[in-house]
Amino acid sequence: MIKKIVLAYSGGLDTSVAIKWLKEKYNTEIIAFCADLGQGEDLKAIKEKALKTGASKVYVEDLKEEFVKDYIFPMLRANAVYEGSYLLGTSIARPLIAKKQVEIAEKEGAEAVAHGATGKGNDQVRFELTYYALKPDVKVIAPWREWSFNSRKSLIEYSQKHGIPVAATKEKPYSIDRNLFHISYEGGILEDPWQEPPSDMYTMIAPPEKAPDKPEYIEISYKKGDPVAINNKRMLPAKLLGRLNSIAGKNGIGRIDIVENRYVGIKSRGVYETPGGTVLHSAHRAIESIILDREIMHLRDSLITRYSELIYYGYWFSPERVALQNLIDDIQKNVTGTVRVKLYKGNCYIVGRKSPDSLYHPELATFETEDVYNQKDAEGFIKINALRLKLRKMG
Image 1: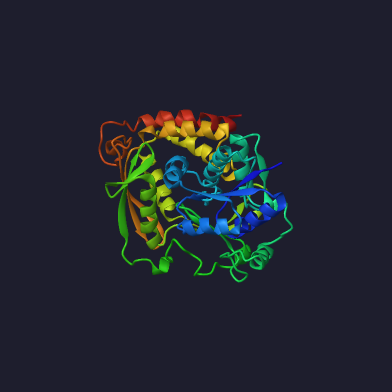
Image 2: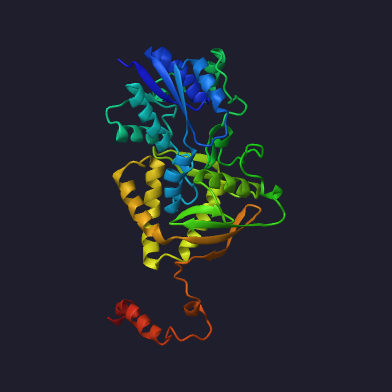
């Protein structure tokens, strides 16, 4: 018998309906957990809404600093990007939410945890892999895999019938997920990959055509692979990311519109805004370029696809992700320095980089006279490397 269920609660359509549905289905106590990841919502109102909808208790926890420091920054140190475009803003939030949910379940003596992710998407996998990794004996309830509702339209009708206030409407039914790193839009009118998103949909980023006509220059300082300051002003992780979101957003930087491959095998169209993350991704690669040894960099780059898939698929707490992270973090120990970035109408240009640990030596790179590198040595180097190519034609 299940006496308590801890529900990952956002206050959106799915989880608002889930509170009432779970309470009726299992005749049990529902504890709602809302993670503050910088989504910019009125969390007090969300808490009141959960209580009015049927939750017996609501936890609201400020996780912004932990989110950026322990999840986003490690991911950025790895230059993670899924399928060449997606910077994993939703993916990286799920393991932290699920981890805290398990902690609350243990504190409350709850036998089960629940989430509002659909049976077609990635989030169900991300939540549940984390649950089982951290609490193997936990009971997992996924309402979307159990209830009779078959669309968001039917959820809206149910919520209206039972007086549950929700932001989604039949006219504007796309799904929105926001945190301090990004905002995503999926479903509804976006399901036609040929259809351009409505111009009034975007939240964090100005249209490039309406961005300032004058470029903006900023400097980002790094220490051991993590950004620590903007224009020489040191900031805590969450504040730094928030500030960069504002700067990059007003300059129209960080929008993508992609069709991605979900873990369950379905292709899905997603539109994302990741302003600060887009700049940090470019800046990090730039500072690495003058510091990392060539073979070390190429080895790490060969692992980016695998590392990114682990986050996208939900394996943040897997031993392989931890092992890769340890390698990546060891590689990052000398990644300290400053990058100068030019932001202009949707574009992020790297225009300068410097580091006390730089391996870039102008006296070697120059086309002018120097006495460090003997150019005649290149002849033997080329002939040795050409030997296997010559053998193919020598018979």
